[in-house]
Length: 397
Image (cartoon, rainbow, N blue to C red; front, top):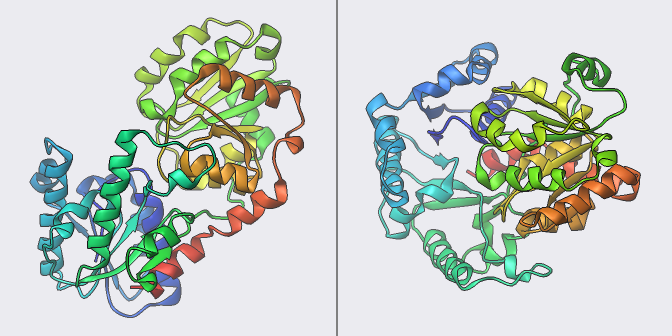
């Protein structure tokens, strides 16, 4: 049983790759995927994979009852939501007579298991956001709140790794594996690639897409992709940074925003720079099907990810690397460390708009080849192939 009650973020992509691998290799048994009813509506393309490739009918989607989903989403605290998920995992694992459980977003389900509560079957989980090892990175000095968080993480992980039903912790952070393994059995901790499709599935050529979007031919395209109305994505800081550029540099620039469903919030933030005659801004609002995503990264000259002290991995780095495009991103945590190690672009203190301005200026005035290493970018993308992602999970359950 795969437990995946959320519609957005990594969930549809991960489920797509797991289903594809299961069907391709005709794995034995039944793969039951527990999702919300909304998932079936929002991600029909993922559901269609089962109908198209699963002749054995060995992949089944099981929907959470509407009231259960409402209770989960309306929980008044993170602790309350944790226990709501625990109850759902227990209920559906029993109903389905599951022999193994995989929790897609394990970070939000830990507390009941840390307290020693049991499940109807052995379980594994995908762990997104360890931070206790960040103090080993360059120029990383944790605050006292972060030190408390680091201690809590280590206590939780120690308890999880010693839970009698626990099978495998799949961690998306490759730099955390050895630190986590020291808390328990090394064989129970696996690095899990954050999957990226390496083949070019673009529907349009870059020139065609550029023309369709109405982007001027002399502009360098700086792409912001995803759910950008979340404050942690750094759009207010980016807007202020753009306003500090000279008109001559603004004239070289096109800001391309793709994927944000909350148009009003983003437009409110963009209002100050919408008034700049020298700047071009293009937005493509709404959900972008996975098969179209690569087109936008191929079109971009630079990919923007000025996240605010982001914790964990980011698929944006992988999309950019697979498209061979440099990033301008935060220097904090795992994202900053990966940018430095693989020379993926520029890592700046994205909490300070003037630092973002400096990064934008360099990209507008220098050759991209001087600001990244194409060979290391390619290697980084290849280490995170979708095939590796799915095979590691199924081989270690």
